[in-house]
Image (cartoon, rainbow, N blue to C red; front, top):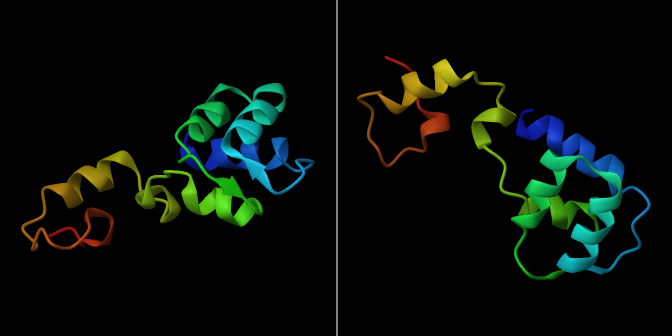
Length: 95
């Protein structure tokens, strides 16, 4: 399961969560309603009190390449790119 699918699962699982909620409350709620991939994403959240779903989403460590629809092969090709390595991998263009 990719991060985007797991995030969709998290959103559905947390749709009835009352905000504000601490990380512990978020993870506990998700443990009852989300699959393992969703719970894994949420366990990586920083300790904080979240005011809404947007704050949770911005704190979940998702792969930026996945947002662009990149495959693993495309991501590997970009990592081997001769471009300046100060540019984030997911923004590099393959040679």
